[in-house]
Image (cartoon, rainbow, N blue to C red; front, side):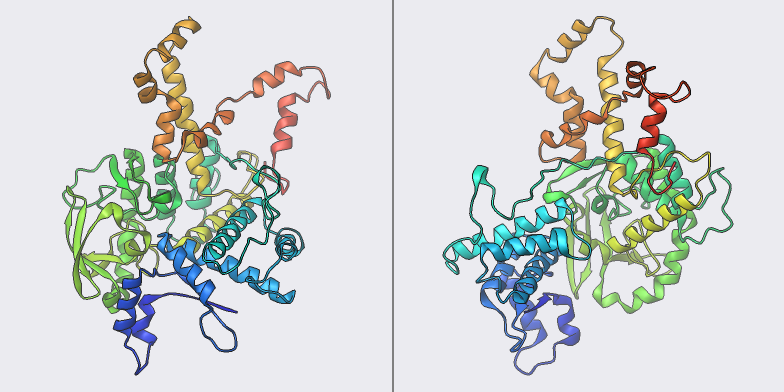
Length: 487
């Protein structure tokens, strides 16, 4: 079975048929609500659609999943079918033992087995897929039996909690300035630095940390949203994020003045050169871009031409795909409306930001010396900055709420005086709202990281183990150091 994905933008360029026009196919896709990224499964010999599987692709599309998620879910079913074909079966006639074999292949036997989080996502897709087939009466029952406590043979064996990884102040400065910014550990310029656009990458880190937003939220921000637009006063920025937020849940994002200043520095020193070099390329692509002519900052809306039609959008409901192709007429010609741009003149994608992070990690390890803070045992992630934001804010609010009253009972009475006051001022609920968590239960998992108990451990185990010169803190520090030589 072959797997393809719907890409309506390619129709006009590549569809050459006397039977039906590209415009007609595009209109049909819109009418049926088929989104770009929807998986299409084709028979290898006839190249005809496989109806039950293609219907599942349409079902995923109607769930309004984003393009990346649609493709990933489609690939899961494609991988399962490829494995089952090697066993002489397929996804429509699979038995429980077939699917257990696939689980073993993915989690144990393949060249690079996947972890619990990846398998948890795949088992969810498989459960949804077979539930869909049962509802449509394509199969009579699910192949995997329901066992005790609602678990089935495909369920992950281990239920893991959130992988919360946060940074200290020293670690963050080292990541930002040495890894991303091209400096040496002593804050001098690194003459061997071969990175590109360090001010952009530093600004990305500052905005991610200062706002606590997810990667898809901060990396797609528009110039008017962050206040770097003609006529705007500057300073801290506040805007609504929705289409690029997880689950499409809207919330207000606050970016502090220092983080906006970091972005402003990028716009003054690096961005103009990137824009100037890419202007001619964007002019050639103008037909495929959303060319904005009017931006209503106060109303949070913009109007422009997309596919030859005048369209108007509210900024918060513009998804990442639309933001990536949004441009305006700037000083040098067409210019991306997103804050962050790469060499092509448009917004960097997921792979680009991943490569920036990987190269930064390599530089950080290569330049590590005796002044370098202890590096994590695993390569850092952009999401670590969100975790750091959450923990710093939560700790600060808790300390602020506790105040300096010597009477512990008085402080506790004040905290629980009124339910409305509890909801408004509770640090955990404030952080939960700022992070956009679907439930405060997710934020609860941060509580175990808000207290640094090394000093208490030191006192509790003083003199118990080791030599006089080896303290418990030394042992703990060594245990947490990188296996690969991080300090």
